[in-house]
Image 1 (cartoon, rainbow, N blue to C red):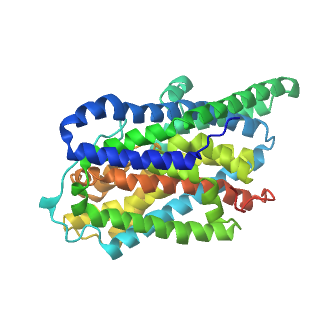
Image 2 (cartoon, rainbow, N blue to C red):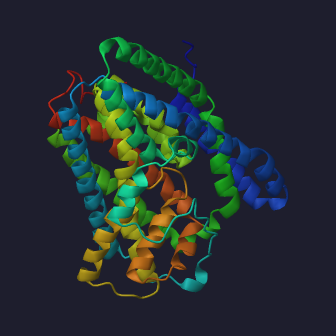
Length: 419
């Protein structure tokens, strides 16, 4: 297979820097901005996101069916599912608590003048409701029409059907099961080849997306919200080093070696602010790192809905920012109730740009905080969504390796640095 002379990570970085440069020029000289954004830059970014979303469902479905039908042990599969969910809830709850602690200590909203803030436009994707109860989440997972669920990209519903279908295939006689599994493996392999083709376009997509962002808000609008941006980045670095670092050490995994191995995916997630854009390639990288394919095909897709570490971390910070912005005191008991609310509202979120506003609005509404505060975050949220998305991806890369350690399914080279 042809290998580009410039590694993909450098291509993405070049696209990112060129996009920032062009965006800054368009912000400074706005006469050409509308035409450039509408006709070139926005379509370039949208094409990449649509291409990646196009392949997520078939890859996840095929990999999940192969992993489950080829596993042959329903009891072990159930144990892995329970352990995965326990791990996801524990880590995301920790992320929420860490976000609240850092928000209380560093006070990102304290002393900010409301008059100096520039409100942004908040577009809520989908039909996000104000609240998510546990019962609603469970019922919402089960699709009443799997074709519709696939067409809408409802990942949790697709996963549910794939698990059921995989269990059904697993109970077929070997003469009927083997050909169907061979077809599913072929679909999976073909889709990974398609992923490689799409990844070649990723630097152009990154260039377009970051140029639009910088062209629209410029750098002057960052100053009043500089403290919130800084606190968010500090929180993400601390969570990565302390929480994920501790989990990795416990499981005997070299976290920095893992980050080097998936550096292309982390940079792409950072620059595109879309975790869905890197899921197929991430699954392939984790298998090459030594994680069992059956675990990767189950844990990673489920983690994309239940293990959003970066989003959970920002929930705590963003909620306290709005409270401090309006001078509203939240007691410890209020914040303890918020943790429970956030754990529920953060589950089932789509890994696409902008969905964080749905979760944040549900949290603010449950706490009786002004929803108008979201508009002030919206103008610069893209800059915070980039590192939170990268943290989501890193958390979901670590998860199957931890579950593999828990299940004693480690490969011999897992946990070592890979280039």
